Amino acid sequence: MYYQTIISADELKAIIDNDNVRVFDCRFNLKDPEGGIKSFNAGHLPNAQHADMDTQLSSAMTETSGRHPLPDPEVFLDQIRQWGITNDTQVIAYDDMSGAFAARLWWMMRWCGHDKVAVLNGGMSKWTDQGYELSQESATYAPSEFKGQANMEWLVDIDTVASQMETNAITLIDARSGDRFTGKDHNTDPVPGHIPGATSLPFPGNLNADGLMASPDIIRARFEQAIKEQPFNNVVNMCGSGVTACHNLLAQAVAGLPPMKIFIGSWSQWIRDKSRPVATGE
Image (cartoon, rainbow, N blue to C red):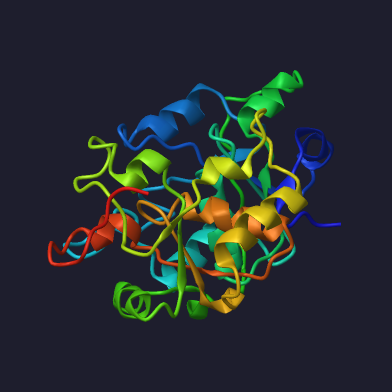
């Protein structure tokens, strides 16, 4: 049996030492580029490798991109091989934000054709809450011969978003906080607000009060209310830079909804061009 969406701490404990399991620490701090590796070095799940948001799960930012552009597919496929992931490997991603960052690796693995990937439900805190051990040793594995191909149809570029929002051809779901969406938060984004016509569905709404993923029925109802009659293939997820939007994509998969699309550049790319329209308020 493979896990393809989420996995509990108890379930992970039972398989974490298996030869075909690879665990990835995806902790990240936007305000401290070294924060993820510092946290990893201080203590992580056994056998884990560090997956760096800025250098391994993203390419370098350009003058026109968002904060976390996707790597070239061949570059990321090579990274998968360097991590020792085969086509039969169970991949597990975790962080300390209930999957907010781990979901990026989950989505990228699926983007490259590998669906044997899951996020630790509740993150690192659920692991330690169970009294399970941490390690300070970094695991290394022999490179693999992983074969995959990126599904570029899952991506929507900025020009497509701009043109199709004008004609209501897509439903755009924004995973950022409500304050960032409405423009009340003037500190996080250089330009506050949202893309006109977008729908606000902050990713924490996918979670219960205990930080665990909500039930599939609750999640499905949440997204179906926003999607309405729009075909699933015309639903596009976004956030600040294509990271927490992946948490909404993960939640959609937990709810049994079909794969939907993502605008990786998201808000941080949209506001690079000051001529693009910006809306504030609800």
